[in-house]
Amino acid sequence: MISLIAVLACDAREFETWCRNSGLSPRDREVVYISRREKLRGLDNVKVIRCPRWDQHPDAGRIDEFVRMLEQRRAHSG
Image (cartoon, rainbow, N blue to C red; front, side, top):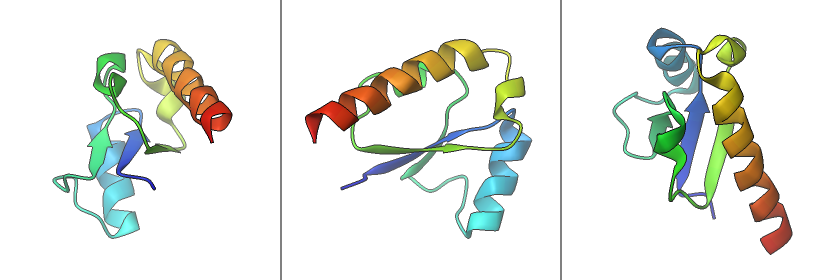
């Protein structure tokens, strides 16, 4: 069961646009903008959304590395 939606976006504006287009609010507790890798620590049962320009985020490489590790761990555990 997914308990959180982690949104990878280029910036807060792209995150807010994604939320609006998805019918969600950026203030929803189950939606979080991953602005830095540390926001992913300790998260489990998370659905990751990659916005079209997310790879333009200044820390995209490090964030992507951490996300891929989480996804692999989830794939092997269930």
